[in-house]
Structures are given as structure tokens and as C-alpha cells.
Length: 193
Image 1 (cartoon, rainbow, N blue to C red):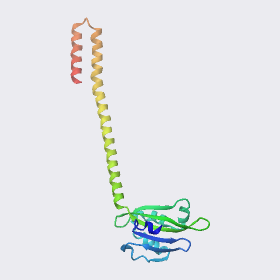
Image 2: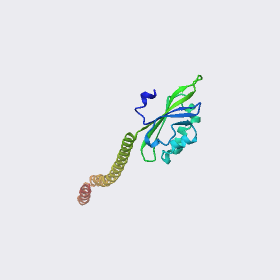
Image 3: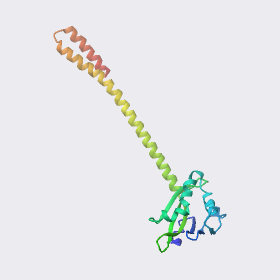
Image 4: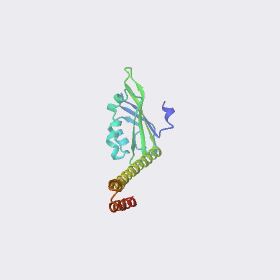
């Protein structure tokens, strides 16, 4: 398992939860200050968390917490966390089940890290374009609604005048002067349309 996935990840460690011990299997040069093996204590966690951007530190601590790890991995094969490091690179860390004791509790995991910078940038750019498209669509819909509201008023008023004066002209067909006045108003309203 370890050898099969080692080409995908830039950083790997084998963590023995029962013995509270870790062993680095693969690491990049920027993590050369982390002890290659030792107790899975606060110093190891501090060293690893030291590379995590501050806005992700709290959630990352919870992700890396060895006290809750066995329970979190009870029904799944791995847990993972995406975050940015202090340099702004997007990373994905996975804690993968490696071994279980006789009772079926997870007792060892593989800690694996890989860069997802390009995928995450593409995802964030896509999300930004999508949000822009939604905003533009909402703005277009608001403009259409406003246009139709104004046009409705601009059409309704002259149409009401045309209908009203046509009715008056029809009911006063014998009064030539009134009919001419109504027809003039009808013509004026139709020009307004």
C-alpha cells in the first residue's frame, strides 16, 4: 500500500496510534527540520501545523488530533483536509487506515500530503466565474423586470385613453365636435405608444 501510493504524495509518515510513534517515509526538503521518527507528541504536531496558514490552523489541529483519529476512521478508510500552507499553496492531507487491532480499532495510519494547487486554483477560478455569471444573470433579470414594469405603465396609460375615448366617441356618435375631440385624443395617445 505505502509503495503503491508514494509516487502521488510528496510527504508521507507511518503513524502508530497505539505506540504513539511516527516514522517519516517520504518528505520534501522544506520539512527536513522535522525529526525522521519519534513520539507522536505536541512537537511533531507543532512542526507539521507550523506549515499551515493561520486561517486553517484550528481545523487542521482537529484533523490531525491522534486522540480522535481512531474513532473518525471507524467506518471510513481515510479522512482528508484541504488547506493552504503559509506560502499560499493548496495542499491535501490524508490520514489513511493502515492497520487495525484484533477488535477492529484503527491502530496505525498513513499520513500523506500532496499538492492540489493547480486543481484548487482552477476550482476557485471556476467558482468566481460562476458567481459572476449568477450576478450578471440577476442584474439582467432585474433590468428586464424594471423594463417590463415601466413599459407596462407606458403602454397601459395610452391604451386606457384610446379605449376610453373610443367608447366615448361611439356613445356620442351624433355629436361631431365631441367625436372629433375624442379622435384627436385617440390619435395623440396612439402616437405616444
